Image 1 (cartoon, one colour):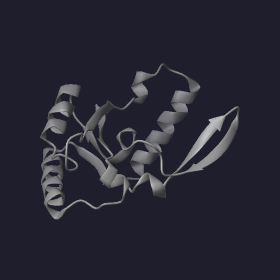
Image 2: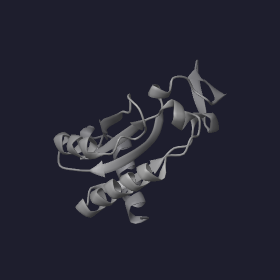
Image 3: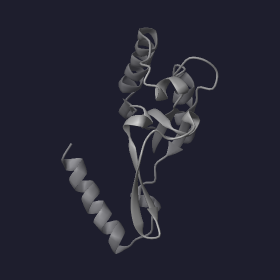
Image 4: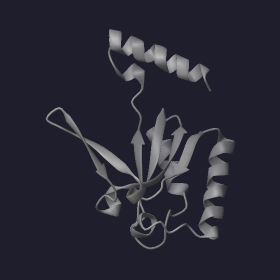
Length: 139
């Protein structure tokens, strides 16, 4: 089972404040632990939403909206993608993570990925499986 551990943004991360060396060292140690355990698939921090954009769909039309975007707690500052045996194991990893930023309110959200096996058989799913296979071979 794949899960995304989503680090919620803070006012500081949205202002572009870089983490202190101490936090970087703690995160690196945590990341190495997940890598050694064989559960870590990917990870990254994200730049502030002021450097981003959104495409909104309304009435069949697309509209580009430039950042920044609202409340930091509704935004993502970074993530880990892990592969574990259960939701409980994903929760255990998230509980071991260093606090992603200073102060109260730091939060890591845990979300499970849909897998193609979660969907019924169809021509579209078969095409998706072929694409997934090609992507896996490209790694």
